[in-house]
Image 1 (cartoon, rainbow, N blue to C red):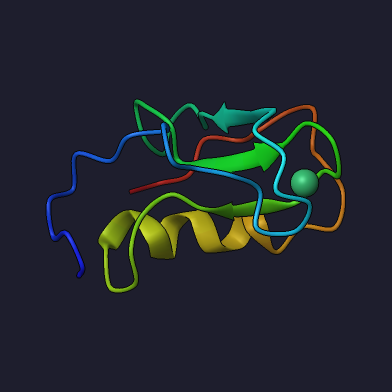
Image 2 (cartoon, rainbow, N blue to C red):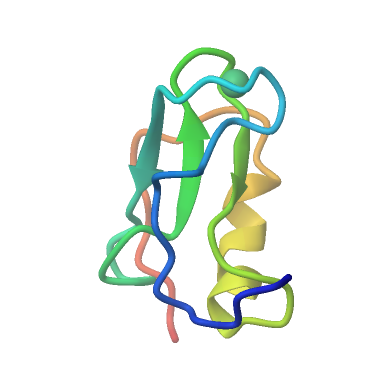
Length: 78
Ligand SMILES: [Zn+2]
């Protein structure tokens, strides 16, 4: 049963690759004032916080697609 509420909790969130609960919420300044996506602290996998079709998911796409972490984020025109 899908919960359509966007108030997502981290309680039942695990890395989809290694099932670690040691993950970080990544915030990109200039993109979204809050957690944009999750990043696993064990295997480094990044995965979406927002469900398919959500406007913030499409914004997170470019960051999830990057092969390496970028130390400096540029501000993205909204
Ligand atoms: Zn992982």
